[in-house]
Length: 357
Image (spheres, one colour):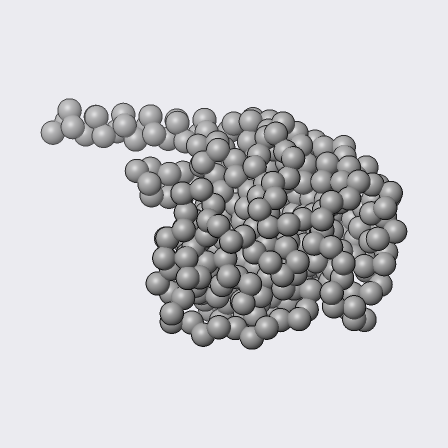
């Protein structure tokens, strides 16, 4: 009996030492993802182990350069001095608005987008025109489904752009999705949301998906009748957690281990969409950039998993550091609360590594 107890104790200690070593790995050997608080828009900075940088969207214009300040701070924290590629998923102001200001502060190598603005509305004209003026000063590329962006330290595949989606499955994928028959086809969406550039980012055995603001009809095209994407480790909830997106058919097909919701205090985090993500089979954790003020306690996660708790601008980000073996650590910058998620016999196990208040 004593021998067995000692064996179990030794195994537990060795396991903890292994996990601690993995979680303490140098960021230069990991994929870093910063989910930046731009108050209900999107701006996500991704830096690979080759120190190449990808910025997905730039938040809002105005607010005395608030969003550019936060993007610049994230770049400094990540140790990058230029942005190699900026992907603009679509031309709504909460995604493209910050381009002129951030371009004044940080050198940008290439802009990638879905092509011309199809909405041509008051909501898009100003931001699109301002973006075009900046984009002509750098390299520019139009994304097409199936393209791969030129990074050495990570694989970035375009799965949706300009209202089109990939037609063939990602290698090894393509299983029939049984949820498709239980959900009705969504209506056609003529807005820029449906034009969003969507990406699958792979780093060894770690998979992260960002579909911009794709709405349900285009989401379904990626997973119905067959799931062309496979499963992911990390899912950025589509469209800030609004119920125009995040259909059960795609969320459960992706089968994420962890989800990040880039909502604002009064934008996104809609109870219906929140519940679908929260209840997704196999989900180990849902993290939120903001407490959703209109959702109530029953539609918000525990405070430790929320970067910004009140309505006042705080600017706290959520950071993910991923290893090649699929292990990743999520950090709430509000007070460095961390959790590490590792795979063991194909099952994701969440582990508390640090809580520093």
